[in-house]
Image (cartoon, rainbow, N blue to C red):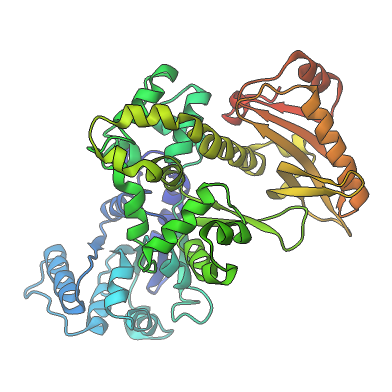
Length: 492
């Protein structure tokens, strides 16, 4: 299968689909593809069907009978049989799909599968029955059936626990957003500071550049403010209301007002359950269900504290939703009136830096340590990278650690490979390094981690002064990471 020339990256996903579709083993096989909306799943699967001569069906929100009729029409147009398909039920439809094989294995894609399952909850069980071992329709077929969906709460449960399709799938592929490096390449941005500013608003969702911003990318650092005004804050563009639609499209989110309030609380810096409950003036038990649903939908992410057992914080997983709640939602009536975007952005820019850009920079630093940093630099391969709060009983205070890199336990204690501090707008100096040294000493006394090789990482979006650079030059345990290093350059 030759990847389309206009498909950016997705090499891993294309290779996984190629292996699954071209697998020559006898019998029909089942695969599941999921991911948040706008990540290019449909483009990926349609391209796979075109490359391998497969069949693609995009479901819509419709009654069961209408979906069966649409599938029959699409299948008739694809195969051109002597008489058109008319399915009495999904048992007949699934068997007709499994019969679409030929000299080579053939992909069969059902996109937006949750719509069909919502109209007919028995559909996963019907597919399970169609794929049962030794069934003639399965053993005699070489169809590669791919179920795809964007409702993460539904798709995540499709193969879990006692779900009907558990154990039936030979592929479980998640199409994720582009990371900060790939996103910069995709947007054509070479300036790392500008790239991170854009990523803090739109993340790595491909559709936001091609369809939603119509290819409009900031021409340079001086164009960033104008770009925000003419794209994200412009009522005429699809990006303007996208954050609201992302929430409305999740099928399990019924009382949207409460879910919006929970996300708004997190955007305001209330990242614990107690903080959210206090902000909303509700009991913690009252918001437990909304938090769980937002987690299942992939909109809220729970992060365990690296230094305090049973403590955790939450962050909004989709940058555009975080930007909407921190910058747009508080002044929505102002933004809806044409011509106000520039005035609103000028008044909101400081809020964007404090509530969005700073926390996003910290998250990118953690992702760099987990996925991009050389293990030799850290002294080992990270098993987990998080953040946390270190209690200092002797000084009766506590210290926040933006980046905590934990290695694989090889004995009684897991090694703490590194701790780091991330500052977006501050030029870092020797005081930041001394602070990390004190925190490392406190962690050592606590005895939970092995700190014998703990590196001290300073991340800065504004650079480092001469004293910090000198300390890094003479101290092998001090590493300075600037924006250039985060985007693929060498560590200072």
